[in-house]
Picture 1 (tube, rainbow, N blue to C red):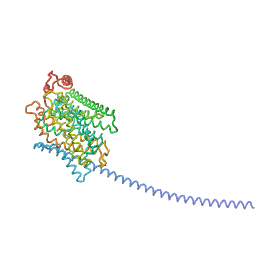
Picture 2: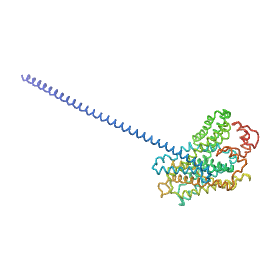
Picture 3: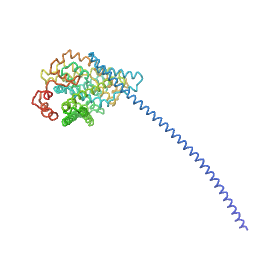
Picture 4: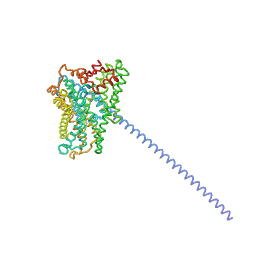
Length: 569
């Protein structure tokens, strides 16, 4: 009985325990289900919040995209407005030049009118609260070196009076190479010495040399225009023109050579700099002449001279070769300016004779138009730089000292080089004192010097502050401001009176002379007609007997004194 009772009690306890366990499991399941439902609701609510957050972020992104698009549209509109302003300034410069020419106002050069217009426009933009437009109107260095300077230099070589140029090639090289080098170190030394003596802003030694190199680049566009108008002596014209074209290239190569010494100067480094300078100049010249010879061969093989109906195609072809020479030299880290200059000389000497009559005449006018547009842009932007670039106008003594140094260096260039040139010339061909004075007076500074200064400023070549009294003025700022001031001063003070000097010294061609024909071919600076014949001796003899017959329709007649134009006719 005890066992039965114990079994029954044990069975009842097991049943009760099972029932309680079942009830606990049911209650736990219900609680778990309720927790799961509540968690699902919370998760669903969180997912909804996330979706709302994503929608808000998408709306914010779309608003930012719209704002960016609007900002880009506003910036593009401002760029177009700046371009319009630039072309309006150019039209103002052209009409000013027309009026100055029409009323024969010689004291105001056309380049000066462009500078005044640029200064006025930039001042209006700044004073009317449009600093963003003024900043957009800043001089773009890459745009100048790639699109503005090459047409100017190529046209100078293509439309030059070649016979007068080559008749004076020795003197031109003497002034351009020896004279520019002397001017570089003399200006740099005088400015550095004055700075160390406390007379002006004390720039660093290398900064002074770089400044001497860039300020030695003459730019007598205004002077040559007056020479053309008054029919100046052809030899004087070719000397001033040839020196300016060559020393522009020399100054650019000198600048690139000198800035390599920013990390330090050593004897071996100086020697290698001179070697690199020679290699760059010679290699760039060879590239330009090779491209010119290739253009001559192709145009002769295609017999373009006999196809007047392909005028525009001929122009497109000959416009492509100069940029090939320029970009090839730049791609090889040489001087594209030197290359395109000699490409222009070579194409004028050979390729020009393979073109049809219409294409030959039109090409000269076309290149002149492009060059004049580029020059106008440069002078206008030179004027606009007074307000569009940060200027250190507080350093007025540096401008005065640098201007005096330029005049002294110009004297040290012209007089010794003239003595060297005259030592190897006959009495009737020597450069007289009046011609030397006019050459000295023709040493205007302009576009090329200013652009090299802007390049140095943009690259921050000399960020040092050498004057504690002006902690925000760097050497690059001083170089930019001084170059701008000297360019403006020389354009106005030397560009206007040059015509009076020609009349005073009697350096004009008299009516009926053979040289005067050089000005009668095409009006403007393009005249490249006949001047005094160059005797067929030395290199000229081999050129006329072997090279020209190979590259052009020209045929050698054996006459040692006749000019190419006469023999071709």
